[in-house]
Every structure is written in C-alpha cells, then in structure tokens.
View 1 (tube, rainbow, N blue to C red):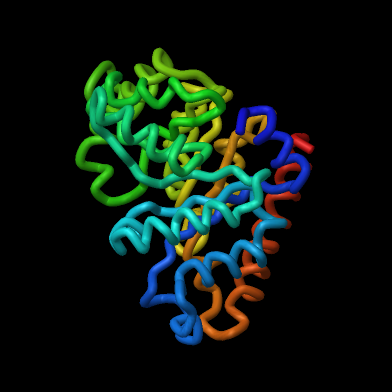
View 2: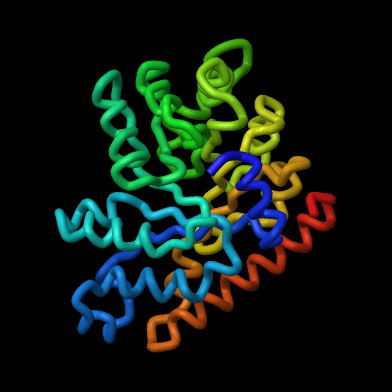
Length: 273
C-alpha cells in the first residue's frame, strides 16, 4: 500500500487506528480452545468485529513464531483474512545486515506480503536499506520508544544537546523518505513527539501506548498530527482483550468504535477530513 492509498483509507474510515494482534493462547476466551486453531479463530472474530473502525492491523510476530510452524500457519491465515484495503504491519523489530536483512525483507514483504515491518536501526544503514528495494512497502524504524529501557540509550544526550534518537532519525532521512519510511514513537512522551515532528514534519508515525499503557490520544494528536494525519495510533490489549466471554468480539468492537469516534473528532478539528 502506498502513501496516497493509506491517506485515503484514513479519510474514508475517519480513523487512524491500528489494532495490534498480540494474541496469546492463555488470554483468549476458554471456549475458543475447542477450535482446531484457537488463535486464528480469535483473530478472525476480532477482525470481523473491528475492521470497519481501523486502518491497520499489526500482528506481533513473536506471538506466532514462538508456536513454531503452527504459529506461522496461523499468521498466514490471519493475514489472508484481513481485508485487502487495510494496512498490515509485521511487528518483527528485525535488525541485521546485508544478505540477512534482505532475507528478512523477502520473508515479510514477499512470502507473507505485509505492507510494513518494524526495524531496529542500531546496526546502521546496511541493516535498513535492503527493505527499501520493495515497491510500496514500508520500513517503520524504532525511534523513540516509551519502555523503561529506552532510557539506556535512546534519550542520552550525545552531540550538541541532541539525544541519540534524534541523531538516528536525522541519519535515517538519508536512507528513505516519507513514502516508505515511518517511525515508532511512544504515546506516553508528548515532549518527544514534538521533537520527532520537528525532525520529520511529513512522515507517518506509528504510536503505541494508547489504551492499556496509559497514553493520551489527545496528547498524541496535539503533538503529532499533520495535514495528512501522519499518525497510526496502535491499541492492542485494550481492544482485543476487552472481554473474556462469548461476547468478547462485540466488546472489542465497542472499544474500537469508541477510539474511532474520538479520532474522527480530531481529524475534523485539524481539518484532515
């Protein structure tokens, strides 16, 4: 999916919601365990219930590859089930160099046909550039995450008052552009969102942390939105685990619809739609 198609989806659905499919066998409703593939059945029902309210789904690859070959089969079935007009993100956080990096790109862009993949940039240019060889595919670079360990490196001041993540972002602008490069920025640091937007006014940002992690959608929008929206705000647990009974999908739908309604209000307020 290219940039114009993504923007069109945001305007059509009046939403910039991304739903994380971080599905764990131990957390899904017990009655689903009677199905041949409980995780796929859970994902299928979540997608049925929420696809009208989101523009992206983001399976976290660890939750699937940890199950071996069956998990990869479940991932493939899930991807095939997602409507084709919805943006798909492989939350894989890969980071290696040369031929290995290219094989990761082939895995997620050709074998599984994701639209985007999250990539760790700390091995530098040759760990990222192979992903840009694929038409209408996206690199989502880890920039400024909100986990506690992010303080170990990302926010350290290294050069003329700049933090390390700022240097990483500035360098990455030499590798890709706003048509194939996004950035992960945590929702709980509005001050960091401002810095990110100063570096890259037009890029899309994938923003996790709204919902169960306590990030404020209002703060994200105020500090991150641009004329094209420029945001994909991810919610995972607060939507997919909204309920634990036979009505779990209906409760997930309600949570997704609630976020979409807020997003519609912000998109109108900022004259994106």
